[in-house]
Length: 336
Image 1 (spheres, rainbow, N blue to C red):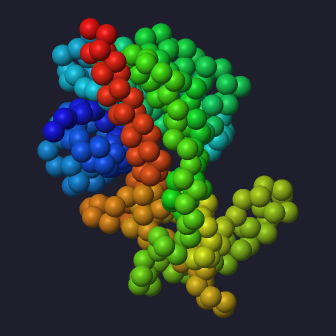
Image 2 (cartoon, rainbow, N blue to C red):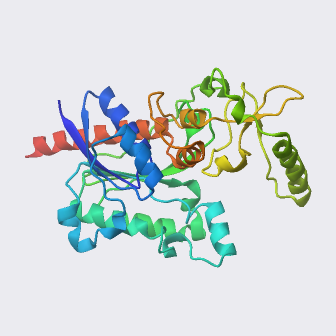
Image 3 (cartoon, helix red, strand yellow):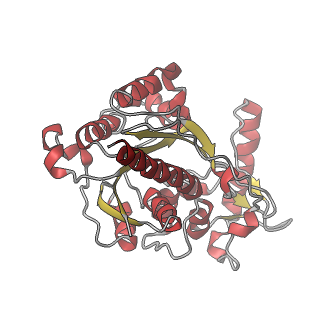
């Protein structure tokens, strides 16, 4: 059985790797992840619980450009969900209010893209899959996005990236993300997967017997209602979202969900306080399997799930990417 090797950068809890694994199994191929990078200790704990023997480089910035050749293993596919906060609407707004750098000028997170670029250009994987928030495309008038594409296209075939929504791929969550793929060699135009438009409802992702601890308190419920009225009057449009089990999808669940659950409060009936989603439910809404281990606290689990990739979407992309790589190899052999 053929192995497809990978490295998993800014891995979080391993969502992109799970998606690649699922795609490879469908193709009767095996995955060999040679390295992952993740700086957050709680994410390392969850990643390690699910993938216990994978070598790690905690901070990819610690690998200098001159050391990439020796410290980063050769691999077929590079996976990277590079930090989105410097490009997201909320992240940019927060940084501006604090007079902080954002975008590629953010030396803590924003410029991590250049570390990815150095690894791609030096190690030359057969393909890469990058993921970020949809706002990346129009951030700074699109200038940054075009700069990213131009730098990637110097050595790779990079088709026009696409924004895909989790709700169109069998997940009951509205979650739009932009995906960038690239290939070392081109044999034909790459086409992103088409939406499956599978009918979904939130109820299919909920716990059968939800725990009482997720029901919000009278005080928090009252606070949500007051804040929503104030925001509506101010024209902000922000406030809690009451979600019904038969709804087709929820709002995007963010890493801030642990604070008050405002993005998605589950309706429990009239005269009853709604409840927050459980961490397991949020992971389900991201496409994680039931056997995925969650060894951390609820608050950390909410952060991890909120920062994760929608697995159903990435799996479909991985299927297309691996098929493209295999076809390129066949074409190359015939030409030899």
